[in-house]
Image (cartoon, rainbow, N blue to C red; front, side, top):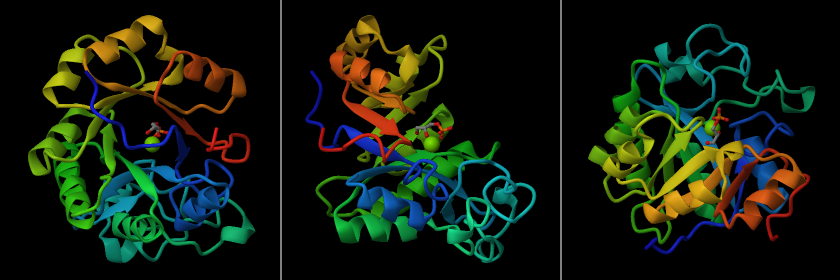
Length: 246
Ligand code: G3P
Ligand code: MG
């Protein structure tokens, strides 16, 4: 028996997919302008323990910095340009903290899926600190953020720090033992590479009492298939293609 699910079907990936610099507040604002009410973001820690938003372990692709993001203190990360790589329109856009995004979501009634994306070697600590901050920021809110990760250790840290926050295991492949790990971590959902879902896997997830979500779905045929399978959530870059009301 699955618990009630408070999240909408449509979730905008990294804010607005590729239409704005991923994981910046500008991207979340653009996703919201397209009608999205729930967002996925990637969160990791600065060297002094501040959760901030960035996908890659290194700074080069999405900022004007160099090297591993997680080895710098927040005071240095805060100086970087996280928008100029995308387009002139967004030059000077800063890296947000998770707290910045939480304030934006809470002020506007938007929901959040925080993907815990640890710098390698910091899995447990990142899960713990992100969950502690999420618990603090969303205290008393009707709908908490959904915490997800590919890294079981990160989810274990989150479970220890804030057991009441919902967790989801991300799966790119169905590795041996995934179901036992998801159960031990008290996961309420699986977020799979969309190509993994078929009727048997949906049945298996439901049998485990878990919801069924997919990333990153950018084609109509793929979304139609997932909806026909009865899955619960679709994370997309294509905020310009899909209507979140549908
Ligand atoms: O959280 C879903 C999706 O974002 C996972 O993959 O690499 O885009 O963070 P990635
Ligand atoms: Mg992600």
